[in-house]
Image 1: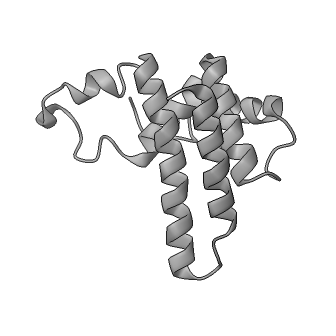
Image 2: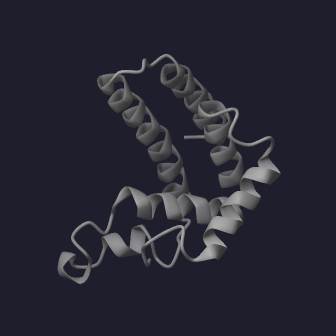
Length: 131
């Protein structure tokens, strides 16, 4: 999928996300929409061959017994995306599209968003995992 196609899909998902209500079922629906958006970006990154310490592609080739039971968890994929967003402009653009369309009041601009990612990654305490 091309970058422009992903951006279009992210914007459509953002509209669905904003249309969800406030009860528990709506919250679950919103979370599923968020995961779908993130998976679009992950699939793009995997297609491009982007890795963070071998994650995820090389790690998927290891025997299951060499990895933690929940190794391929959401937090690890979020770390993957956040790291790649600070390293690759195309991923930064996709992640900014995602964040700015789903939660348009969270950051004023892309630079502020990327600084926040770098600060979180550099802190060593934001993510409780190892890749």
